[in-house]
Length: 222
Image 1: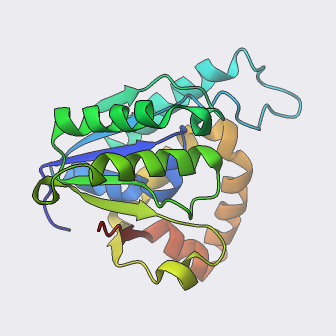
Image 2 (image 1 turned 60 degrees about the vertical axis):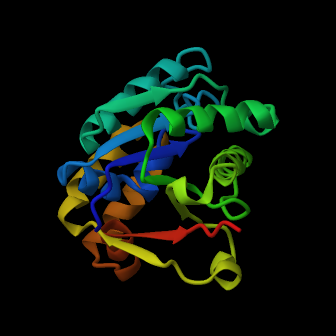
């Protein structure tokens, strides 16, 4: 992995980072790169309140904030920005406001690499709105000053449309940090992790690869 001077990670929800990029983040931090994580909401509309319920809509934001802080600690991130938007409403935010929010972060931090979702291929409306804002913010910059943008994509048939990922990061040495980041968000990830633990125990190849390799598409600007 090439040495970056500063990385900006932008996702809308706590736990977005854990599944897709927590190994990569942990690797960058271990290699001495400064990482800033801008999390746009607290995921207060998360679908899992437990059965029997362990939370209410009123208490869930505080639970998810604590989980986010625990995940950030697991990855070693020193600079977390909680941006204060409301879960499941990011898609309705003003485009100019969203773009300015990302532009302000880029202007402050001068990252060499930005990590976010791939617009059009990240399923959730909040994911898509975040991806579009990140692309708009970078696109408006002078070409020679733009940071590289690495995106994650997971919609159906995305590889048929955008091709294979051009960046694959081996995070085998950081698998435990990745697991810790996922377990930090246990209120929302318990059922997924229960299934994944079974698959890891049974030497499932896809589950092994998912834990040990993270895939990115480098976004191409005009």
